[in-house]
Length: 250
Image (cartoon, rainbow, N blue to C red; front, side, top):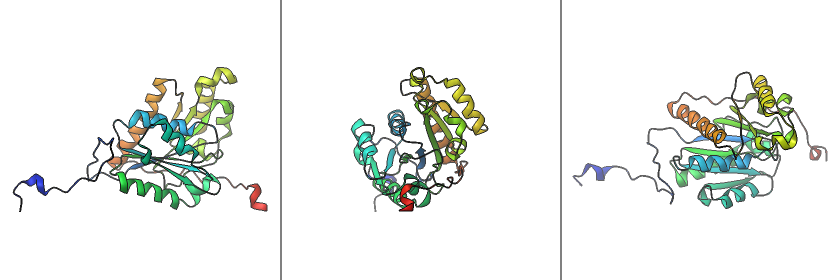
């Protein structure tokens, strides 16, 4: 029997080549943050930004969702924001909301595979495929939800509401640097969003604005603190509104 107490300690899980954070064994599983929003609102860019900001202090992984491709995963891998093996793609084969709301098993499998391979992880970001203003994550999949809209979609988008806008833990109004080119008043758009969200946080974001990026990263850190302390309770923004697709009638 070794007489050195240190030799009797359990072996830590194998770490990836860029690993430098070790989660204490008594901490909860990785925080899972869902990122949803319509097509073209910059969800993948938000994920890339968060990885650049936080990968130096947190152990992270990403799961993307696309209907028939792994385009978003390939974008993130090519951007070099994380080791490529920490970015997994789920091809939903159906409307994007299905895999984040109705049957989350494929995403849960991907998250759990990443945690088993590279854990302990601090944070897993899960990107929805582009959907509409009603897309929300099941709380069985995401502990917190970020919903993205952008100024190029029109200054009135925030007033249109929907569960994603009104109930997500954080609403991001993205691409604010484009506002002068699309004749949108960002301050008015933020005010509309704050009114629609009844006190829930709103963040005007541009990937060219370091201050807004720092605020986004701080929001994630604050959720992680609450998650680790056991005081964060996943909230369901509400079910998606009834809707149909052309293929439903064929």
